[in-house]
Image 1 (cartoon, rainbow, N blue to C red):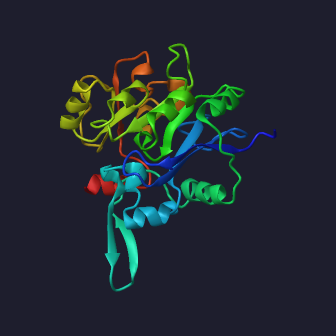
Image 2 (cartoon, rainbow, N blue to C red):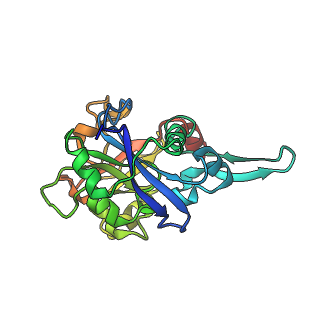
Length: 258
């Protein structure tokens, strides 16, 4: 079998609202072009029936992002007859990789395999995996991540970095996900639930006592990359410190204004 550029490791109802989603892993044949994460497998969690841009505009991205406040506010303009998403603070550009991967999926270029099969194909390249390059890992059943990342094996190093805003409802994700928190109050709440945390903050906001700035970020001088750092593996990481980063990416200006 010729190695595909990516594959589908889950297709079915979202764990967040039951709508149809698909989880796609890419990077089987080439390196990621993301200079911060570097060479990790990327996973994309998408509405199967609606492209990512339209899903964001109409609020249908709740199926893959839940109640994450960085999704923005969806509204319908009666004058233009168009939907739009305003005040979006998410760093992901929907018109690039997410939309291109959604289109490629509908062209049928990604074979569908069981997560365990995907793991065996992934190990031929010896890379770790980014859980949710777009979309929240909570949308995909935990059993799929368990098999894909070999979470039952304490010696497995398949997990790379992953983040969830759904930490209040899915405590099992602490095993490989950081709790994405946006306030000091959320930080303390997530800690009580057993999560390590990743907090996005404005430039003027202080770093908390147990936090350290992301070593792969501009504020740390880009000392490393995510594939080498290994801090954001949830409770599988050796470090017990929590991570913080100044708002960045396409939505950063909205974050600061908010």
